[in-house]
Amino acid sequence: MSATLDAGKFQKYFNDAPLLVSINQSVNDLSRGWLTRGNYLTANFIMSVPGRTFPVEIFYTPEPERDYLEAAIRTVMQIHLCEPEGDILLFLTGEEEIEDACRKIRAECDEQIRQVDCGPMLVVPLYSTLPPAAQQRIFAAAPQPSKPNGLPGRKVVVSTNIAETSLTIDGIVYVVDPGFSKQKVYNPRIRVESLLVSPISKASAQQRAGRAGRTRPGKAFRLYTEKAFLKELQEQTYPEILRSNLGSVVLQLKKLGIDDLVHFDFMDPPAPETLMRALELLNYLEALDDDGNIMPVGEVMAEFPLDPQLAKMLMSSPKFKCSNEILSITAMLSGKSGWRGVVERCEGGAWGGDRGN
Image (cartoon, rainbow, N blue to C red; front, side):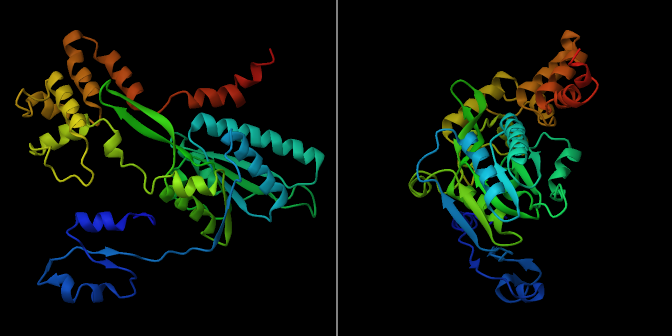
C-alpha cells in the first residue's frame, strides 16, 4: 500500500475497520484474540508499518515558474555544480518531454565540463514504454571521475510518476518536482478519452519528496510556491474510475452477474451520466440488450483484454473478410508504440551513419 494512502477512506469502506498504528507483534500474536473466531477471520483491520526513511529538506520557488521544463533543467544543473555528491531524480510528464530534457541536460553538462571543473553525468530516461533492458539502466552506478582526483560523477534519472511508488532507486539524494503529471481524462458527452497535463496532488508531492530519503538524508526541490502547495493542490489524486471510460468495467460487471450498477458498492461511485453512456455504448455494440442484460456477443467481448469497440470490431471482421487487417489495426491501437526501435536505429544505428550522405 502507499505511504500516503487515505486510511480513513478505506476504514469507512471496510465497516470502520480499526487502524493499528504500529505493528511489532508476530503473526501468531495477530492471529489470536479479537481478530479470529475459530478458523475464520471476523474483522477487517488496517496495518501501518513504519518504513525506512531519512529526513528530507523541502525547497520551494519564491515565484511561480513560467516554463517548468526549463526551470527543471536549470535546477538539475545547479544541483550538479553546487551540491555534494548524490544522484538526482527529476519528475516529468511523458516520453517526449523526458527525451527532450535528457538531450538538453546532456548538452548543458558537456558545455559545463568544457568551461568549469565538474564531474561527468549519466542521464537516464524512465517511462513505461521503454524496453525492459533500457529501464534497467536506472540502476547503473554513477560514472567515475573523468580524470585522476577529479570530481565524482552523478546519475540523473528523468522519469514519469512511475518512480513515485513503483520502485526505489538507490543513491537518489535529490528530487526535482515540477508539480505536474499526465492524467487520464474522459469526456462522456463526446466519448473521448485523453491524457492531459495536470497539477499533482499533495499526496503525490509527498511521495516524490520521499524518494530522496530512502538511503540517506536528502533534498527535494519543488518548482512551485509553498502557497500553491498548501492552497491549490488537492489532498489526493482524483480516483481514476471517476475520469475514465467505463465501457470495459460495466461489461465485466455485467458478465459477473451484477445488474444494479447504480447501487453497486463502488468505493468511489462514478457519475450516473458516465454509467449511462457506457450502457448506451454497450447496447449500440449489441453487447447488452435493451433491458441491460448481457448478450452472447457481450459474453465473448468480455473475454478480450480490449476496449469494447475494438473487441466488437475484431469479432465482426470475418463477416467482411478482413480479419488479418483488423488484427494488425487492433494490435497497433492497443499495444505500445512500435516506433521506438526505429528511432533508436535512426539516431545511433545503420540509418544514423547515413545521415551525412
